[in-house]
Image (cartoon, rainbow, N blue to C red):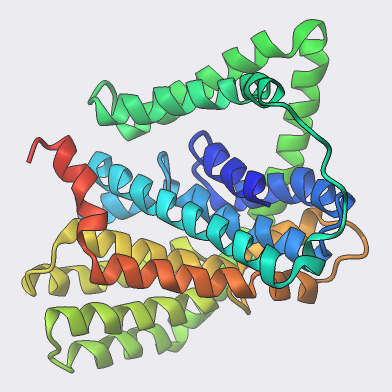
Length: 340
């Protein structure tokens, strides 16, 4: 389970989309966890929940869109998102350790095989391609070598080169298989997103979203009270539409008020990002849940996956509270990047 969480975080550094991360690990990792005795709710719940880390760490598509909408430094936002992604990763892993002590039956009774430290260290070479690509993307952005948009192109080229080098003599067959599977998963994801966009348009036409936002604005709250109120709105809106649609609808309306209230922009960006990203696992429109369900085994139901994400939803709320009440968590890496 912990390996899956770290895998989602690592894959997120070369992907940047939570739906893709959740789908890939729902197809690859969840069946393996079940083979080792994990309950199906926990196995698929981990994949759906940890998939959201892919939208927090660079090169997050979500954060790039946020930066474009608010005219903030995308590089600084991505570095702040890296810290938040690490925070959520650590909390998820701690939750799994505690759960394994409290509810060991959910993790099965498979006898672990003995593995020497030499074998463990030797296995790290399998992670080397991800590490190299992550270093190129994150190091390039942090060092100012290229912009986040350029980082996406560099990462795509790096993945192609690494894949070509590491797949051996069957590289052409492996790459063809990868292209076909990528097209299949991407097509499924875009169908889900298309449905979510249509649903979000209906919500916008009803005026419900704008009515809620106007109600918050007329309350004349303190800066902290305003942020907490907006978090409640983001969590509610995130339950009803996909995160990107919620971002595009809500942030342009609130951001001028946030600036006028003297709220730190990067801190608020991370609060908004995490609050809206929690929506990808919450019903009725938890897109990560539907994405995982699309690649799940036949005996897995939608209710199973939603039950599996319950504990991780609570952990996300803990992470959100940490980000809200300890703003330095969000800002120290961008400040370091800027030489402050």
